[in-house]
Image (cartoon, rainbow, N blue to C red; front, side, top):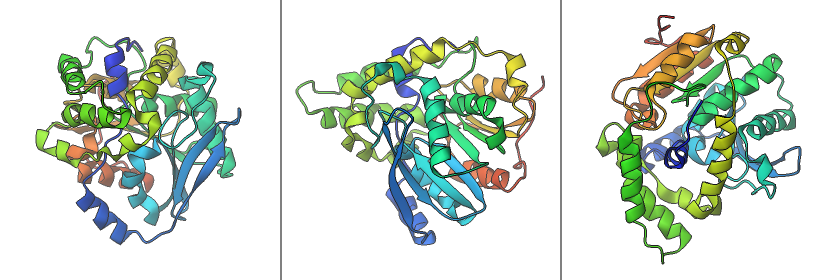
Length: 318
C-alpha cells in the first residue's frame, strides 16, 4: 500500500456522523443501557470504549467517536463494543511515537478483546481500519468469525489513486482556517468545508456533526503528527495476495463508487483477493458511504451478522 500524501491520510479516517434527527430516532428505538470506560493497552495507554447490547454476536468496532452512533443500532442482535484507538477521541495520547502504528492498532484491538473476555467476534473496520482488521485476522484467526470492511484503504499500490479533488478540497478547507483561532475553532472551520468530500451527494454533507472537534486528539496540531507516523507504518507494509489466502472467514466489503479518499478499486481488489469475500457496491456514494445510503449499508451489515450474504453483494471476477 502506498499512500504517501499526508493530505489524503488526514482525510481517510476523520469523524462524521448522521443527522441529529436520525440519532433521535435510533435513541428512541434502542433503550439498552450504555456502558463506558477505559481498557488498558499492553503498554498502559488507556483506550476509551462504549458497550451496548447483550446479543449472542459480539461486534468490535474501532473508531468510537465516528461509529458508535451508527453501530449502536445493532444492539438488538449483538453485543456492540466500540473504542477509540490511541491518540483518537477520548482515548489517551501515547507518549511513545513509536507506537503510533497500524501494528500497534492490531495489538490494541487484541487488548480490547481480552479485556472483555470475548472468544470469537466480528471486527468491523472503516477506511484504513479495514486493512487493520484483516491484519488482526491474520494474526488471530481463532478469534474472528467474519469481517466487515467499510470503504477500506488498499493493501497494495493500485493504478487508480484517490481522486485529485480531495487534495484540492483539502487546500480550500485550510484557507478557511483562521490561524489565530483556537484549535477547536480551526477544526470546525476546516471540516465545515472539507466534509463535502466524504459524500457523493453534496446535500448529505449536512449530516455531519462537528462535535468531534471538542476532543483535543482530533485537533489538527495533534492528529496530523499521529497520521504521519501511522501512514508511514502502512506504507512500509508488504502484503501479498498469497498471504491473504490465509483469511478463511467470510468478509463483507462495502465501498462507494465515488470515494475520493480510498479508491473504489481498493474495495474491488480486496473482494477479488480474499478467498471468501463479497463486494457490496454503493453507487454514487463517497468515503462515508453510509451518509449517502444508510439503509443499504446498515441493512446489509445486519444480514451479514445473521450469517447471510446481503442482496447485491457479489464476487468480482478474479
